[in-house]
Length: 308
Image (cartoon, rainbow, N blue to C red; front, side, top):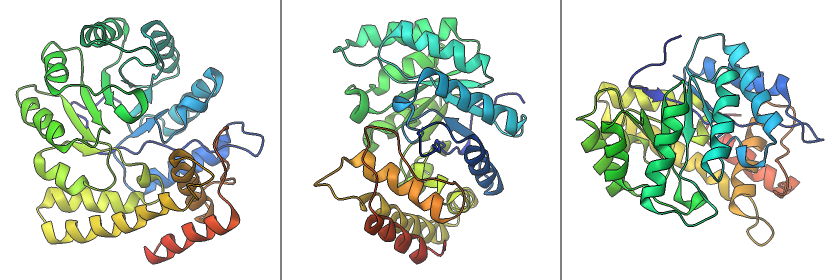
């Protein structure tokens, strides 16, 4: 299919199910894709933070894209993260995921070394020049320790370097600045990565959402999107509040023994396992698995949301 310009709707960052030996569980991955498609989502984002891309080998990254692209068969646009520390390494990932069939690539700022604004601009220009598919910027300062300034993003959009932005910065003021400025750039997509303020982001003028929790409840986020687009403010607010309560599962893990990534991704995978979508809830190393008691907490969130 032709990549939609602009990209709109609910585009979940797809979890990567693993076997107990921590290999990619392709049958579970494809069941998860079917679960998302049945939920009415508008696209799929592979190899993002929720996909545990940073924990996967290069072989596993390509395996995920090939499996999903082959299974989807053009029914939905498939985006893939090309996330790494430096421009040459990102270019390697761009070549790999596009060869595997990805229709757009999602790229963060460089990281590890402190990066100057001019270097970030060069990074995106170099990648866009080499990529055969659209490039979407991924603003996630919690992971890469650099905030993409709104004027930088809009400048690259105006030059045709960037086709969109996935904003996971949590900075609503800067997000609004991009949304407002993007009106001058036809076809540029602005997507929120938040689970908790999708209704607000859409009200500001965002094109869509990339919420990790949509793995667990795609129907809920699609309902929310449709209500927002239909102008049903009361219905959208109620649905957003239900999803906010469900998102509480990400705190199921004990912070005394695990980091936030272990808790959140472990909760999403535990929820998918409890819902019968994936076979195993294991997360990639060195993340710490949830205990039986913590998984029970996740189950209570699912029950309260009407998902069990």
